[in-house]
Length: 578
Picture: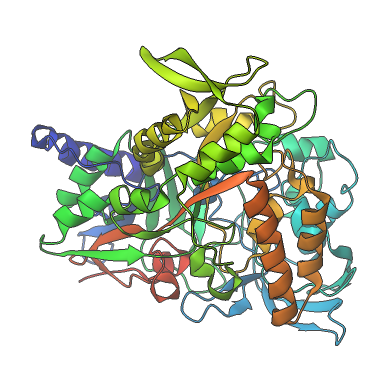
């Protein structure tokens, strides 16, 4: 009933603003809503007055596709996994790692033996007791299948440095690594969600990978209401009153799918949304409104132009793009600062290297060189000195050709999801800049599920693209984003099917370097290789605007002081203003 009432309230208020005719651009992929209050049909036995129910409504423009932590790869799916917990987590204020399902941990002097004391008194949402068996099962399911290419566990890269995991007590596990691991507290201890052995342990490997997990059972502060269905338009959680830690102050969270940014923006202005991520134009419009707070969100983010770099004969990508000089020419042709200024409205930085600028010391600072003359020089050096007129969506475009008749004309996958507004707003600039140097693009609109399928080994459309724009929120440690382009991740996290043994070796080495100065040198060398090879062309490290109303809830937490308010600390700390 809460779901019906929340949706009804949102729709009534949104449609009352249809005549406002907003022209604002689409917001990012997180947003929210500000009713939060509903009236329950149950009555208080003491007062016979309806109890107030507070549900925080969060608007989304991309719906989760998956509630299976073993196979989840898309960032949008995180919203559907809030019932699960990891062993550790990063504190939203200090960025220090603190215990979640782990109560404490110690590591041997050589950095290879981790003894983890687990939290007692934790129960799964079906009433079963959490213990060491669940942790050993979750890690073991992946570790036992590391060499099986058909066992497509998404988190294999997270545990590749683990030699073994053992149960050394009812509430203790010991993990032995092959060597010291620099960011072990981050990956895997803060990345691998623990699953209930009494449910998943009864399945075969293939059953685990195929499991749609419609009614997830977790240990976290939220419980999914109803069954998960990727075709739905809303996703609702209720508070887990039996949670071992701080129980949320609000009754639930409701994620509502919006088809476009205008309705989400109008819902926020109507007072229906509690919080959302406006575009730059929308943020400007909100700055003078009462009871609205607009914040800049500068957490580490990367938006990349990805280029199909798979050199396998089965690749469906354009083989011309296997030439790194052609890929580098694309990079030189792009005026990325213009994208920051005009698309992001100044909230972000021009991209150059793989690790985002907000990651601090781990970012290799190579200022972007917008140099169309250099782009032309590279293309002509590869033999593309002639031109041919082609038709692109009814336009006559001059593209470069070589003596073999090969054209610099590529397919470009462009996401239609609402969170991809800045991808779409960037495209007119990118198309023009590339046409200026003789490169043509044929735009192919598609949603994230369709694009994601082109990056899965078992998909009929695997590698069936030339270029795309997509992005990551990789966190402050460089380990995750570096592993994305590791050969092991082809068919997993990696989208561009890039392989370079020298790069792989550096990524594997930096994980073992516990001294920051040694690791930093290796991280920089790895970034330099990607900069030179250009399978990823970082467009920008985008910031966002977050907005919330301060007349309904208090307790919003900006991660790391300048990051997003859409985080677990906010959801736990939000309190209705009485």
